[in-house]
Length: 80
Image (cartoon, rainbow, N blue to C red; front, side, top):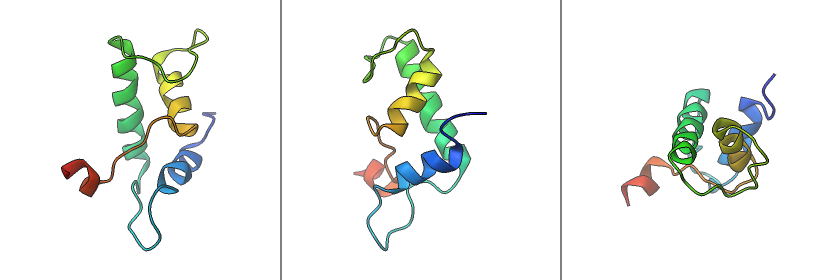
């Protein structure tokens, strides 16, 4: 089982949304895209925001998202 779960990650990401706004992510697919994009950045030599401790890039990307080190931008924020 993946820890944290998709639903837990969605709660963390959506906690950044202001009250009354639509959630930043509404599907597991969005979480998968965000973590895979970050994992690719790490694989390509990006600087980790947490101590890697020998973890694979995807595990590290999930941890970074879970601990609030990276954020998923809403569609409106991404356009700005």
